[in-house]
Image 1 (cartoon, helix red, strand yellow):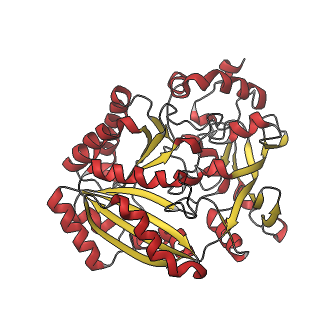
Image 2 (cartoon, helix red, strand yellow; image 1 turned 30 degrees about the horizontal axis):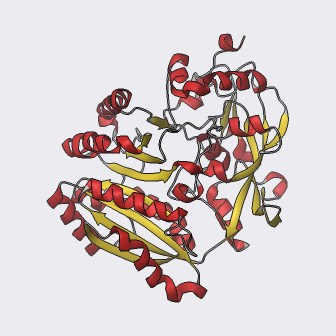
Image 3 (tube, rainbow, N blue to C red; image 1 turned 90 degrees about the horizontal axis):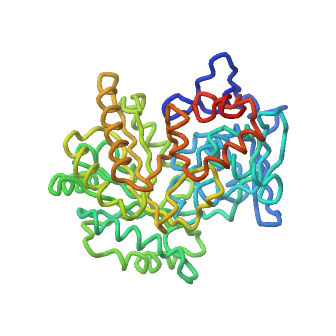
Length: 438
């Protein structure tokens, strides 16, 4: 049995249902003619939205904003389903402050592999709650999630900071996410991501849509001169009532990251324009015939102590030699926003975790070569990335999954036996076999 939400699957493995069935939850989107998004401002822990798992984050955004509210954290791309992202983890630029999306859900309704409909939360069926979060669809089908909301800002000050030196760039990113823990009335930026661009062509095709043509040309020239650049993209939320102090707040925040800064850009945007920015970028890439390419992506969660060797191998190595198309993300997050009880795996030994996202685009003739490079990177991780974990992973044997889950494995086997003893949920992942559960 496969749970079909938006049909998104890193390597197609979750779509494999030989002799089984695929469940299309989008048919529930307007169940009985009524929206399956209900916003409440009066929960015991604050505002929330009860959301059908089939709903897209873009639909949640529109409904919440109409009530003057917003999710604490968002994905970069909003046309993904709530249930699918909670099953994967949900990592984006808000994770340094609020953790991944799985940290921002209060409760869920789940149909287990035994056919039971259970409500789970931190207080009810707690083991199922944590198992399903980042659980890759292995322990139950999410049908409803209660998502934490907060008052919505109306505006965003978008900031882009360009560096040519990776060590300085990484140090500045780490400084900016450290402001989250400082006791100030305003604790730094609300959103932070980092990017690598190999040359001017890369800049022109994939840098933020909020930069003008002239700004793109300037950044491209810096990239060509320095054999690549690193860019911090940040956002500061505000509303009209606090607009007069934004300049002062931003200057205070970035005063600690001036060293090595090549150029800075800022722009004021409506909050919803910023949150839904990738939709506009999607439209541009479609016009350029760069959207409907193959996407052999690889996402990694890397301990801070290993980030420099990954920079040398990837950004100064492989991607300088070949310069493939795509978006290359590299940004830190605070580990104290993550919970080891989740099925979602992450490096647990260090206080800072880096997300490396290699969102590569390739045409049909180039896919096999790119896949070979990805296997090379995975081998490099095995040899040098002690503690590194794939995000949205794909393995082909139970033994590989056992190594991936490490000390969590025995607990997960017990949970699988409890909630899906016949291993009917998402068997294509090849995590749990029927013989393992006998």
